[in-house]
Image (cartoon, rainbow, N blue to C red; front, side, top):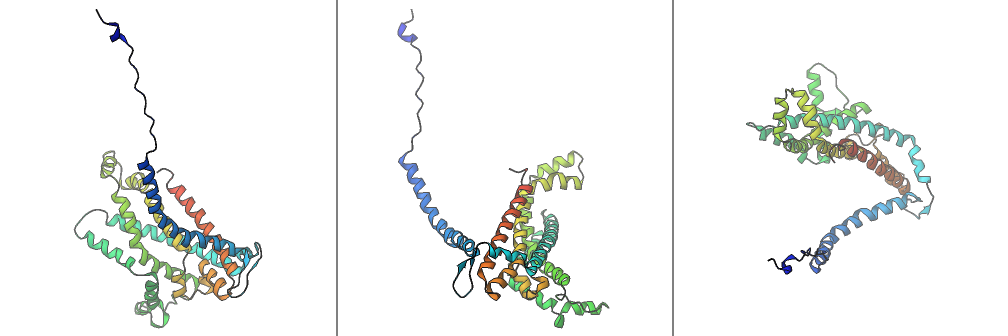
Length: 306
């Protein structure tokens, strides 16, 4: 006979509700304290100057003298013909530089992707120009392009051609500067793309070849789609650097009207025209343009990699 005591219904165990322990609160406070120095640096070096720049853009703010509010009058500087020409030239330079750099860097990355004898040497050689500062590279190429003592013109003369004014006209200066920037940054972007290429599982390539895919199909159906996050990073860096171009044109051409970029226009407004208000207004517009362009790039290139 079974005892009635053994027939008691089983009591479900009580679910313990996790409570905030003192240890977790201590860890959160410690994390906030660790992040406080960097947050302070970001606030002092970025947030405060950004707020000050926006405030200056709504004031008549001479380089020397008293300031006075003037509303959105400073933003009328965007209708200046010289600044409009600088915007067009900067956009053209950005497109050309980004396309040339992307194609060359991707080609170099594909060339040195596979491990073979001597590939480490080629990777080092391609990356070495990235160790040269931008100002130093500009001075180096100024010596190459200077008409009075250009070694390139000597080569052209030896081949039977006439001397070329490499930095004279706007087109020549543009392509000469693109050549210098390509030499300086192609190896750096190659390294970024190489990192992305080596992160692709080799089994995917083997599976594609087993399915009968040729090299073009492997490139377009496997490599490029999986390389989208890396391409997005490279494009953001290239476009941002091109839109903010200053050193190369200021050193190579002196920033004359034909080769003046938007940042050179800001420099002229601030230090030659001594109008910090208009310079700040143009800077605000450039910042908004960078946010929109880079946001569109990231959304387009990374939409399938969320």
